[in-house]
Length: 267
Image 1 (cartoon, rainbow, N blue to C red):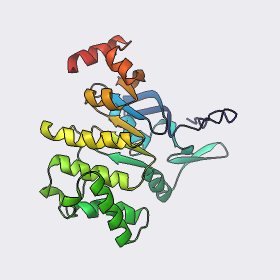
Image 2: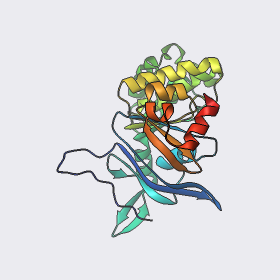
Image 3: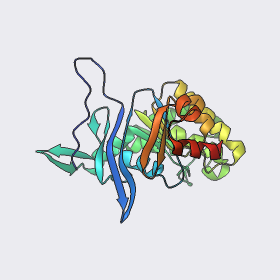
Image 4: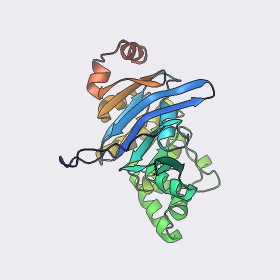
């Protein structure tokens, strides 16, 4: 279905949200995964999405950057519609090159790192800079080394993924996303594949990015991180948003019984 572009009042001078996902619906066959999910994220805001397994959190994130194509609704980044364009009232898919450019504005960090095993850390980070941003090899390498240094991985620039711990691999994956200078960073349970002792190093990097004003949407089970770092927490269940609000409120004094029940089991 066609959803009108979300606008803010021009008279007030308030800008559009950096990220706006409106009325997102998604089903796989007869299984409905997302039911009319909407979320706006302002520039510099950190939003954590929590909820039980199977609640639609990761699918929602994948629909935002069109790794999964929504069945309904639309996504906008800085006012540009992602994945399709409207011509004479009809929505058409954008060419793959346009979608690649749009995705570059939304850095994605996955559960399983998704690094290329045959490439070194610096080459993993530099690859998209060369292919998508068309940077020269020397310029891409210089940028990659700088970003690796910002996540404490400069000493491991020449290491391949098999030579790195899970936490180190995830920091390289974060560096790869940050290097593209995205308008928003999407994290899909970035610590779920890590041993407990490695979780802190990844959360520390994410906290540093938040402190630098990076716009972030984080699907996570790390309630402590959500409480300490995020501005807003969204609780999803059954493919819908059940409750959202300031993290201190949602995590400390949730208003919905389902949210309270969920938090009582994971604290």
